[in-house]
Image 1: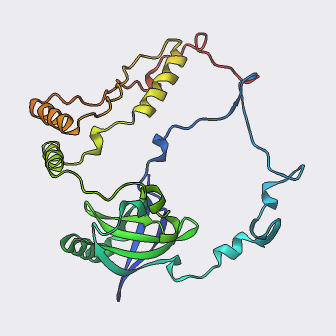
Image 2: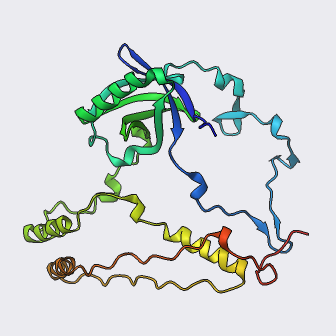
Image 3: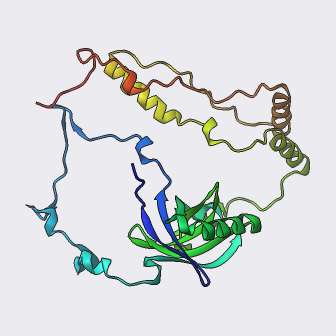
Length: 289
């Protein structure tokens, strides 16, 4: 099956233009989704579109911008589609910044970027390898997903990764949250112990070693209901005791790291719903009448 681009257009670097396809990098199908069910009958709940007390047809709904309380300027979808801005079809790289210069709070959604045609691969490789060698990321703006977004472009394997960024005015001022934290420096010896602990537990990041325990617990709960049994019990990790003596706690942590006794996060054996043997008569489910 051919991959369907989320967006197709050009990346422009000064006088160099590259045709690319952009693909969503997130797998939304892995997210847990619930439906609203009317419990007495087991029927799925559907929400009705209303204006006042009158049901309305979706085709009669347009977008509106509130200029005053209860007063709206109506905007037709075609008017939005016809808006002409430079970033509609081209991501113009305006500047290059160090890869670690963008604070994590700005990053929003990732997208994979690939050349649109085989004939564009040479230009694509030059841009990719130049970014990788320089340690820089390209920054520009792109109209995608119904709005113009600030974007960062960087190497990703043999391809490129485009990450949408939040604008400055979308980020809350941190001062109200941090103003009660005193600016006193931490104890140097305690910092040295913490640095040593970080050093001993340092590893190459591997997202595959981590699992979404909540999603797995939900799947186990669903499987148990389908099979008419109790969910498998998983021992919860007990909350750590409040640190009374930070120096002692750091030393004990280092000792555990030395002995390899730091326990891994509890992992649940996963049961796929497709492997479950449904026993409808035992499951507590309500069928729609």
